[in-house]
Image 1 (cartoon, rainbow, N blue to C red):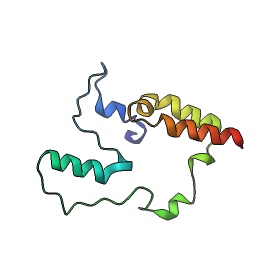
Image 2: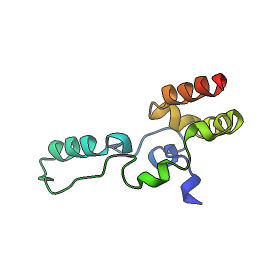
Image 3: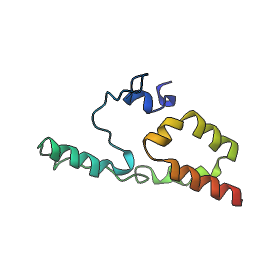
Image 4: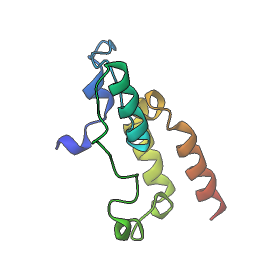
Length: 103
C-alpha cells in the first residue's frame, strides 16, 4: 500500500541521493507553494490550499496522537525514522512521548 511508504522513499534514491528538487511540507503548504511559484516567476494567485486540520474538522475530534499507546508511537517513530529526521518532526515526536509519560 503506497500510503504506508515512508515519504523519504519518494524523495531519495536508496544510496541517499536526493532526486526531488523541492520539498513542500503540508503544514506550510501555502507558504512553501507560494515561494516555489515566486522562485520560478509563476503567477499562482488563484491557488489556495486549506489550512491543515480544517479540511475535515469533524475527523480531528475522533483521534489524536495522544490516543496512541506509547508502544504505537515508538513503532511509528522507528518505521518512519528517516521521515522524522529529514522533515524535522523529531520535536513533535518528543512532545507526544513527554505527554504520554504524564498520563
